Amino acid sequence: MMNSEWNLVEALRHARHDWMNRLQLIKGNMDLGRMDRAKQIIEEIVAESQNESKLSNLKVPKFSEWMLTYNWQTHFIKLEFEVLEAEEPDVNDARLFGWFTGLFSVLENCVKPYEENNMMVTIKICQQEARFELDFNGIIVDKESLQDWLERNSAGVAVETMDSNGFLISLNLNR
Amino acid sequence: MMNSEWNLVEALRHARHDWMNRLQLIKGNMDLGRMDRAKQIIEEIVAESQNESKLSNLKVPKFSEWMLTYNWQTHFIKLEFEVLEAEEPDVNDARLFGWFTGLFSVLENCVKPYEENNMMVTIKICQQEARFELDFNGIIVDKESLQDWLERNSAGVAVETMDSNGFLISLNLNR
Image (cartoon, rainbow over all chains, first blue to last red; front, side):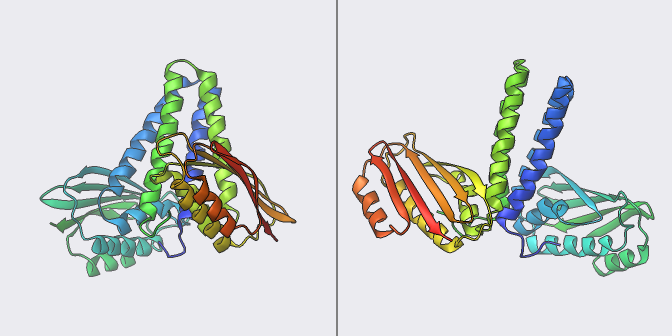
């Protein structure tokens, strides 16, 4: 969970650490003479950064901050995201932040710890709708608590598929 | 000046922008077949990042945040820094922050705009002292205001050299 202890110096430290890892990957491939792989990694990093920029531009500061910093905290779920469209963003930040942090705090307790638990969030905000697709692949050991939470927070939510190996859920916020 | 409008998402946006520029520099050299230069740039970036890490570890959060974000704001002075030693850091953050922000706000109005105005701050914190060397190279058009400020904030300050092309000042904070 995001908390008030997060400060700017700490956040920049985590970002710097991530970038150092990426540089090592580039350097490692260069040292092995794998120039094409090194260039490919750079392309991937640029794409990832453009994605982060798009998220930062959505004008949902609490939600963006939470998304950008999630993996820097100790969690069982690894969060990735992709912003497909971001047209005229005018989404209720508090509602979005509340729903996501609520779901993730429940889900963190429903998954099998130290396993591969990957969440991919796809964001599409256009004039008609703000749509968030949550594609989770991992091991769910407590499906009941998760379903219980989803029933209590079901406005705009559609559960497409769900079993013990993951789910596909969409959240639609009317504009 | 640092201000309350700075938030985490904005800071990460600036950091990301800096990193994108560095990646472009690496990629550009790789595309030209200059592998040694590309590797050298990576080494430089790693050294710079280690420097930023050292600054972040000094336990002077206000001062560190100010130093790390200074160049992301519109200023006539470009700030660089180097942390040589950081032994048992126990420096008065508020005093350090106050002195530096005070000096820089005066200095920004004393230099010739849009010229090369470069400040190099060297930090050495050991058991005996916390020493900050400020090596400024640029064009000073209003030396009087600068000297006036320095006289009014002279505790621990030694002006080694000063002319219209720069100065070397040291600040010593007793431990």
